[in-house]
Length: 460
Image 1 (spheres, rainbow, N blue to C red):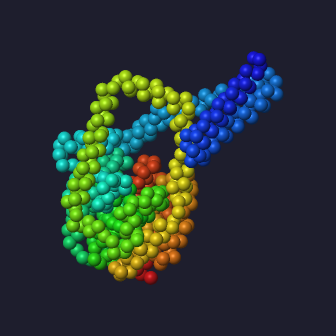
Image 2: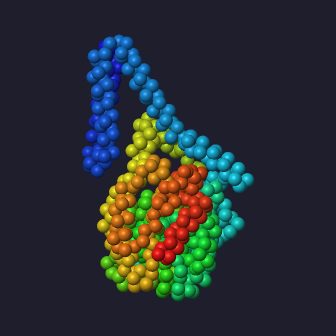
Image 3: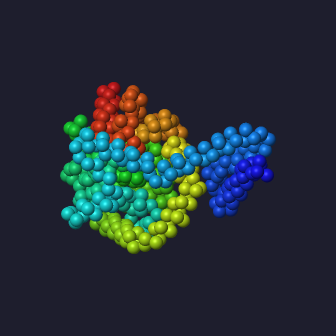
């Protein structure tokens, strides 16, 4: 019996994992998570095969098998502890702190956004944090859908480069340094896009729009905002475009634009922009209503945050119960390790971009029609992300997206082709060579390359 104890243990573990997997996959999630639980089935089969083999091995072979098995389990749980207690994050933070200080002689700001907001609010009562339009996708009140932020507000954006970027929003809530640009009927460059165009995590002087303004000496209107997908971007162009935009630069980010569109297309109000060419919310004359709606959203979030903060401080017993009931239980299940394997960013990039491009094609056709009506030149700027260069992968929808745009007669500027593919260290243009938006140098060089492509196109 002692000889077969190890073999029986493996067999029992195999059966337990199999029962657990079937129960969770087929009964709890009704088959919707089969792809996730297939890893559990493989693990169960692995234990089963090991247990059967061990019955037929001699004593020495069984001893080696036990050593391999226990060493593997020990290694897995060491990795789980590493992930569960953010050891890797602490090491990365130390590296970032050191590198940031060496460059700037300043301390890296590790406060989260809410802590930074509270600190700034002590000195500047009217400071705000930015609110993405996609926060209103599932709003109960659909009488108006904001496409930008609060007007004339000092706005906290984000921190990836060691400091929190802050900008003063214009009359319609966008990140434009010169509010008077809205008084012009003719604009040389109109930029449309998501957080990259918004100017995520860099100071206003380092954004795409400011770099383009410096390069061209022309007027530039920034209509970008964080979290935007293609439908919100098209709606923004319809609502806020000047009468005569000479050039429209439509920025597409490969890692999440299609995913964002898949959420936006289900919003009844936004769908009207696709179904009706003449539909508009007339948001330019409704900024006071937009400001009120966003202020209420901020107030609600701050209140909820304060309640959670108060509860966290007062409920010490609950904290310990939460640790033992959740933290240790998740460690026992190797939750973080499994999550890191299954939900790796490599998988996310591929999966996020494997969605249907049908709705995207409809928007591109609308964009082309809009540009013809305005007599504008459209440039489709394709922005590659961090994970492409981290894992050396090309998203699944890369070629279909480019094909759709080109078939509609729109000029494509692929930033990978004009810049990254010939760069020895592409990750150096991301914050501390880690996941995020581009750093200051990245924004500047990329916009320089884009502007050069525009000049080449003009000279043809």
